[in-house]
Length: 93
Image (cartoon, rainbow, N blue to C red; front, side, top):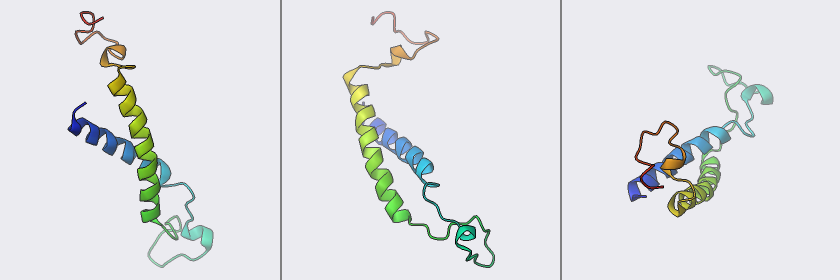
């Protein structure tokens, strides 16, 4: 795996984890009863993005290490998921 592939894999996992964790433990303005004029009641009352970014980064490091280990060890290769025989996988097996 090239260094660019490793960075792209990290970024993809990071954004996936971010979008999964954003709605977790969310308190809306409607829940607190303090709706700021000009905003929707479903807007976040207090959003702590710095804390969420730290949590997302820690989770991503663990997941990235697992996925990278699987890719580099060869447990799962591109030939394992080439269902339509588009590659040259028969010659390597």
